[in-house]
Amino acid sequence: MTGRQHQQRFESLLHEHRRIVFKVAGLYSRGAADRDDLVQEIGAQLWRSFGGYDPARAKFSTWMYRIALNVAISQARRWPEADRFEPLDTHHLETVGGGEPIAEQDERLTALYAFIGQLDPLNRALILLYLEDRSYAEIAEVLGISETNVATKLGRIKQKLRGQMTAAQATGA
Amino acid sequence: MELDEMKQAWARMDLRQDGMEALLRQDFRERRMEKTRASMRWSLLWQAMEIAAWLAFVVFVASFWVDHRHTTHLLVIGLLLHAYGIAAIWSTATQLFLLSRIYLFDAPVLVLQRRLAQLRRFRFYSTLALGLPWWCLWLLATTVGMVWLSGVDLYAVTSPGWFWATLGVGVLGIGFSLRLARHLAGRRLRSPTLQRLVEDMSGRSLLRASRQLDEIARFEQE
Image 1 (cartoon, rainbow over the protein chains, first blue to last red):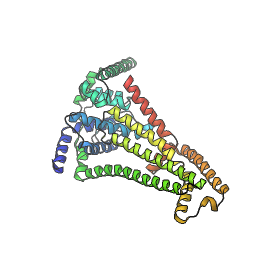
Image 2: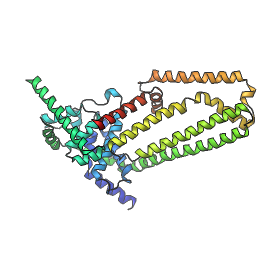
Image 3: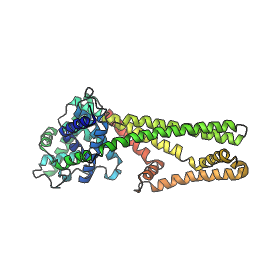
Image 4: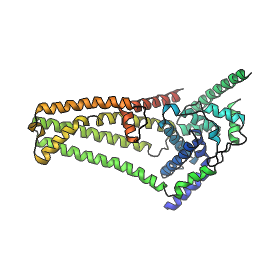
């Protein structure tokens, strides 16, 4: 395969799976400018690593999740402790160019973002993969833990979320 | 509200991606992607060249102390620099090995984050162990250099008292550097290299790496 063909193959795969980059960048950034940097950083690392991608070892999406999450978590760890994770808010739903929030922002999404905002980087990765409807096997492969561990952790997260919602409803009532 | 309900909300959410899509393609359009690959190769090559330079240093210092084995202070100085050179080779080779394990960034998240934390921890120890001694080593290196270049033995032409006093000042310098690093820790410095040096010397980077390793271990065990 020539260099040009190699690049074309990469660009086509990247286009096909681009949502992975955008979702990861959206979840691990502190604002729109940060998210743009992260999108570019992930894109650059994907290209750097593409020569070593072996379809026999992993699906492209699995490989892409690993790289995108590794870049995002490493970048987040470089920030000072205090402003590492501001609560996720509407800016995470803004468009990059226009900056207008999505019009029909539903209550559940706001609650979801508020919940994710409390999680540490590794649990954020877990919840992202779950929300993206990845199988337990793929989540385990991306994160490097067992499927049983994935199930246990998700069970705990669900329990925690249920507890928070019940508390919020009780406070609201 | 259950997590499964949130999953449905998440599936409906669709970020407007035009701007991000353009960003993702921008580097290709501006042909920056090849540069990023080249810069990574250069950084690995640079480390390999560093090992070669330290090997040359060790060979030179070994020949120096063999030639001057009958002069006790030159023998000791040569042996100290020889040991330092070996430590520097070991440190650079270890960093190269640790870097090669994370180079592609495609290992499972927990594996890669653990390797990154191990690399940070190693860099912390290596910066301290190999950087601070230069407060004293400069004198030893200058002595060897002068004997080799002009045959002048600094230890003999000055006096042992001056020599030891200068080494003592070096030891004070080490203490001063550590205190200064603690003082500067937490501030944002303009130079990223200086920032990393301060974080290493103040122990902050070690603390961060240790916390990260704990966090990974907890995540695996919970």
